Image 1 (cartoon, rainbow, N blue to C red):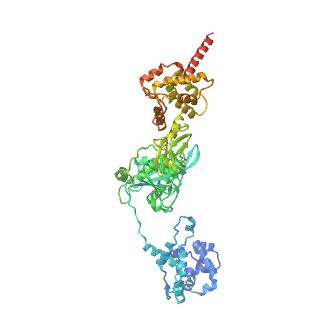
Image 2: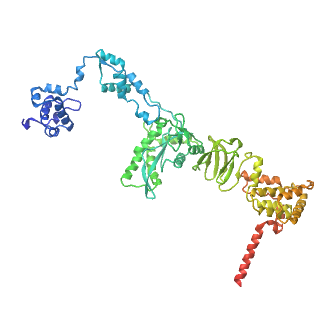
Image 3: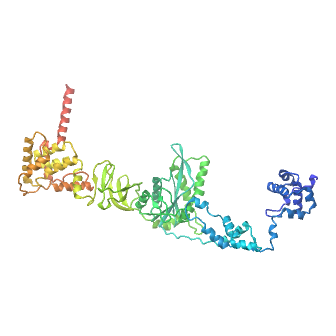
Length: 609
């Protein structure tokens, strides 16, 4: 057949979804009987897919040039498009119409209610629903035996989709109040920055006030607790106030265990919220509509601000720190906040200034620092040992689980968000910190004896009693053994006169006699036995500067934080009397100073010689 009889058919083919002209189709099939698809493309001007389908149809129908030549163009077209015209064969038969309401109900019932990915992957699809509740439905099968015919699956799906478009469930919109809550989420896109010339990936956190739509964007190193808590605190400072509720997704920095009815909030995150007087509300798992506002803003920020930052990086830009990255994002987000909202003709910034900012509450302090928390069970003694220092708690909390919150300068104990007690941190300082009625009296007495650096206080008391008493106290305090036991014995001896000034010489005489008769150090038991062996008249003037009651009161003040060290509140007269006391009453420090001065003088003489 001459080449001139075949003309390119590109200009004569009908658009998509239409049939090719029957005359042209016959010529194409004649040429396809003896040529490949590539030759059809070159000679007939067909597209690749059309040429491939023509050759495949020739093979499928077993056509030859003789068969095609014996048919008219309309016969060729009818044979070629026989499958498309199959629906006309059943035009006179009654169709089995699907129950679209039943299909929709079954589809809704098979939606996974849990949050496991396996359940979502194994849920029935629309095609399986059509097969089960249309083609395999007993009623429909019975109708088929009576002569009715099924619609094709694609036809049923098309009808079902049209039904769903006509029966769209109305959307529910939540009315947000100014200053009520703030929503937080992370952008899925990460941006590259450098730290110490090493590439890092920054996570972008977004916080939104839903009532006004005002948002805060900050790039952080990761989603760890210190980073997230600091970012939330920075958003409050940026807005100039705090909302009542913090609504968060179930990211690990905020939620320890997710739940449909309120997840378990991380203790450190809860401490941060409590610092700003906020409550934490956790969203349901895989329910983005619970935080729809922040989801929309995350999409907006990702496609605008982060897209610009990523383009800057692709063009050779570089962020050498997180600060540079945040400085780059800030003018972009400011511009986004100034854009008018659709239908309102006001920007997010205007809505924020007019209604949101006045509704926010000011915290008691902006000086937030990340808090380290730990859960402990209060031991039987009601004391928590932290960094070599004990902190007392009320007795009713013994064997109860509480939370410890540590900052750089405070220690707080809480239970389910309620503060139990708070103390200044006393790291590496052995001792006890307590409050009124937190410790039993018999326990508190021994704790007072355990307070360090009270030698000078006891020596002042002893010097007021007598010289020999002061010498005996100095020997005891310079000895070895448990410090609290030594102080307890010294206190027992000094308390024997019961602050009666008239009995001071008697106690001094007793100790002088015992020291003169004993070759070794006199113990406190011998002094107490010798004193109790005689009868004493506890009358007369009382010592108002040195007595056991004042001693315990000063110790109690130290343990409760009212004083830093133990000491007497002496009257001017008593202070003058102590300053005129003999040198040996000032303890070993006086001798050390005199020895240092004498040694320096001897060294000077040696150098001059």
